[in-house]
Image (tube, rainbow, N blue to C red; front, side):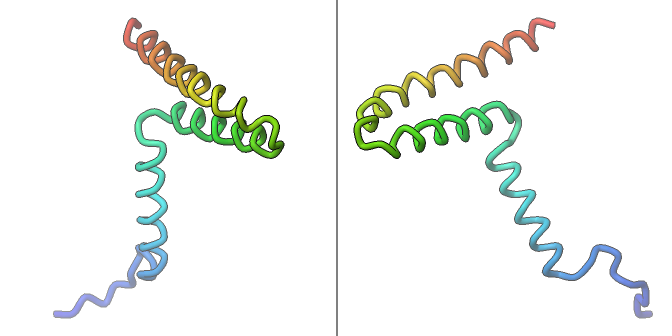
Length: 84
């Protein structure tokens, strides 16, 4: 007996695009969206600093400080939520 019901999930291409989007969301954002946002902010700040040749050296020294700050804020947030 054949199944004559229409496919409610949509065409194959749509399902692939949705699955691809969900993969990247889970891969990039995962359980800690603040790390994703922090990484985007750090990359943006460094990109703006690197626009001027004189600030590229500054960007090299600012990068580890920004990354350490983002990680510190993430750990602090996680510890605060765990204490509740």
